[in-house]
Image 1 (tube, rainbow, N blue to C red):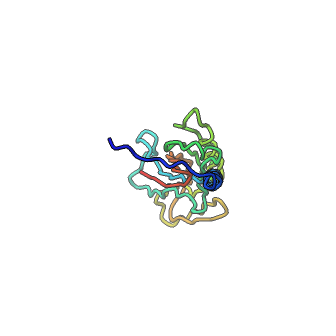
Image 2: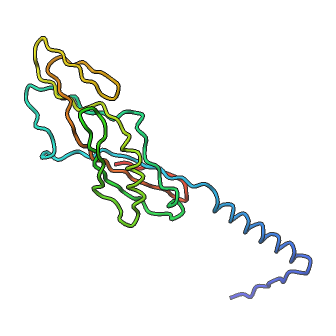
Amino acid sequence: MRAQAVSIPSDRSIPLLVAGLLVACAAQQALQQLPRSGDVAMTAVDATAEQSYAMADDALWVAPTPFAENEAPVYPPELLTANLAPIKVRVRVVVDGGGVVTESTALEAPADYPQFFAAVQAVVGAWKYWPLVKVLPSPGTRTDIAFNGYVSTYDGQATALPFHQDYDFIFTQKDGKGSVTSN
């Protein structure tokens, strides 16, 4: 190995060295105070056959659709600095025949971080849907179904039905910046 010379700062360079260290410390502190954000991805989960309505051969089914205005959950701000791995919350949303959410239940959520399910529950309770409608053929019959301030008219004997939908919410963040992932 070859020996290297090390220079010792002179009395004039010590104040510059101290000033440089103070600036570096202040910059590091400012970086730690930057606002952090996280994003949430959502994926609908298909129901198993035993949890689905039996489809009659002659019935027309109109699938429920969530309103575009439904808000997404927000990454819990108090957990952004924890730099957690992606967190998955699976929730079941129960919707009545009028397209209004009546219940949300955690099917899978981290017990040590209840804030994630709380973030989901805070928004899904206000979600609205175009309802699930079963239409049986009935010549000359028209049915109006009112929901969420709207009225839809169907040709035949129509019935709005309650339903449930399961969703996976994936909470992700990296270095305080959000990224979205989905299945």
